[in-house]
Length: 162
Ligand SMILES: [Cu+2]
Image (cartoon, rainbow, N blue to C red; front, top):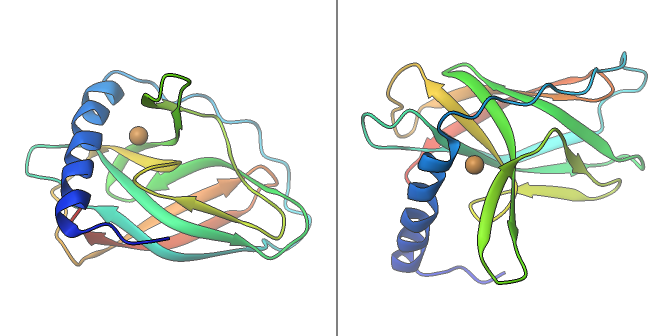
């Protein structure tokens, strides 16, 4: 994948972030499916976990990362949490038939067997809501993901400028 120039990146992000903030307001996170008890070790690894720095007064942001599944079975994420967030949501971004991009809350996100799920600016992501304090660029935040089979995955995410 080619890297966009910084200018394009920040413009795209600004365009993506502003409607996102409006769109998330007033949403209630969906009830996650009931987890089963963990039978096998969790086959997920995480890299590139980051949280987008937001201006003072903005209380919602996004978390991105790449999840790699080393197992054959799909891993279903059912819930996300963040230490600085009052609540968090799993979100999916899709382009519709008219080419318009929209995001919506989803009850689960799936990491395919022997595959990866990339959470990013342009796709699926975790939304952190009701931030309890301003975030500092460079600080590390604890996030947690829960899976349908009852695993909890702790993630260290660094706050980065968009
Ligand atoms: Cu979102």
